[in-house]
Length: 152
Image 1 (cartoon, rainbow, N blue to C red):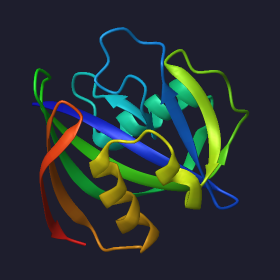
Image 2 (cartoon, rainbow, N blue to C red):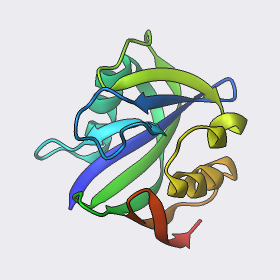
Image 3 (cartoon, rainbow, N blue to C red):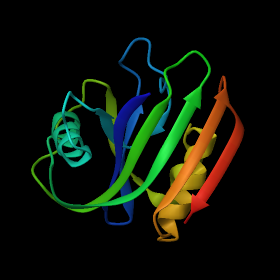
């Protein structure tokens, strides 16, 4: 099971979204997601979060909030435990990302983008300021075939 972080950085009613188009062999290819990535050996989730946000965006988070744990299961890919964060306090200048295009997208327009179907579930929970939750998402291809929510 792969350990990863995923962060939705907020500013002026928008989330900073990454359109994943540049990496080969990417489970997220063509999708819009938050920023984050895989843990390095011996990293805490928070260390991974801060490093990945800096690497992908050039931004330094000054504060952040752990919102939930996602269990992501997709045919043909290693399963992931994703530590889901939001952040709105950051500094620095946005830099280009080697994994795709970064863009501030209004929260009310997110569902018009190519997203994983399960992302719509947790984005709704974030919008509703839900309590900490655990969400299991199982896919066959791009089709969401199972979702299970605990908490929230």
